[in-house]
Length: 163
Image 1 (cartoon, one colour):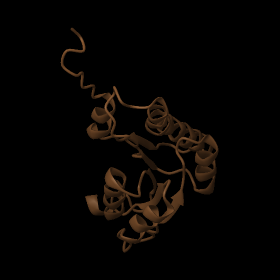
Image 2 (tube, helix red, strand yellow):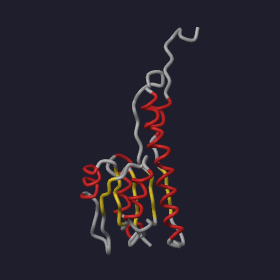
Image 3 (cartoon, rainbow, N blue to C red):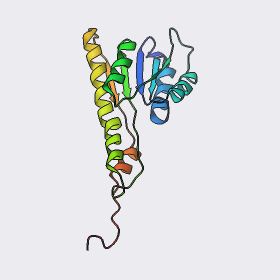
Image 4 (cartoon, rainbow, N blue to C red):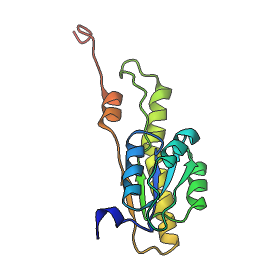
């Protein structure tokens, strides 16, 4: 089976699909024949991605959806609106771009809510939906950026502060 058609008739869900890694994943999945649910906290960004997706393969159709991955209710609402996807990619993520010494606790909490809890909530909801419908298989992938990780963990200690 060629790469361009290996995902025909497969529903895929991509969180963070409105930009960055998520948008690139959506474009790749669509180019391989998948029907893509572009999920993002920004409706405008999700729609921008969806409009640009390849849509010329048999049975292929795409949709944009608003989701806050840090909210169990929002995730549940999304997953119950669609059939269980064959492929789910967790690409939603944020960075606060603050050095560790200057980062406010609420900014750190938001990063954890989106980047960690969000991946957990989506993975759990999709896995539960796949099991409930008796799906024989499915793929759940979590992607991230080293930029997000490094910007959150970077700690610049001013000279002399440690003696």
